[in-house]
Length: 107
Image (cartoon, rainbow, N blue to C red; front, side, top):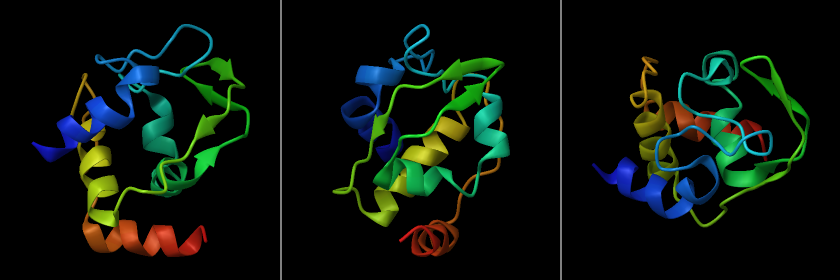
């Protein structure tokens, strides 16, 4: 699965291999309420990063996340679909056309 490999290369250093995040610094992706409530923002966050304070599973996170502008639309789709299907997350998959549309909106 391409998404798993891309996740390991680009995301696991901070969000950890098991998606649990890094204590109070890096939010978890495993069982994350943020994924379900911010679906439309996630492609933009992967590509452009995030500098806002966010709340994930009741915990406040203030650490900035760097974007990965080198990832293609297909790679972002694969990473997000991997995250949405891993670690007890059971969220609907993204379609490539959906990700492209969402990325257009964040430019």
